[in-house]
Image (cartoon, rainbow, N blue to C red; front, side, top):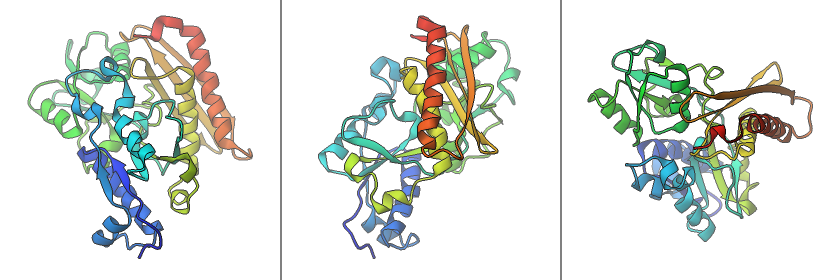
Length: 320
């Protein structure tokens, strides 16, 4: 049984958020000495605290209209700062570039598939959609990338959880939708997409597919936290979020970034687009991180440099 006080985990109440938090709950409980196969022991060692965020409550408008991606984390972070929970499990792509003072991303577990998934009733790929087809998405990045490839598409605002979006597609509310493959896999829906989007041709959101374990800064190196860290994912995400930081990324900017390893070399491609997809600014780079004392910092510097190059080139063209 656990030998220390329970670790209270904060999470949103969506099915995906609870699935992701449940994955981490079992790992945290095991690190505390509980049997991860014993549901009662897991719940005692690492109880889940469901917190409804503003982003969950407001479903009829784009996030950029109501304050940005921080609306998925604000109430949870307030609970962390108040001491009502001890950690939070977020989708990394929902994390703003800057965190409140006193909080940190303490661990990033191994990443799931980072790609966007294409779901449709009428086509196998985005390129195969009929002229003027309706594409449902609430993501400015997905909108801009899709319009860059297919300017004829009718992009319609589609928010809601994964089940809601798939239901709207099946009911004829859109001809196609784009979702994160990682979320589909975590919900047992990995066979749902018709195809996957090339992450180099259309980079996903920075950090997509990864989870962020957020804690108070003072708790970042507790023993149970250390068991959750995955170094390659942490380094890759640092590069992607470096680009995000340089571009002052929010839901008001269409930003994609994808980092991957090839034989010890970290490669990164980052891009930003005008909201209508007409303009796209891309930069790529790489760095050797295998022999560095601080590979995470080197990766972040790579991302910042690429993001700054994009920002210098694009100017105001990428802002809403």
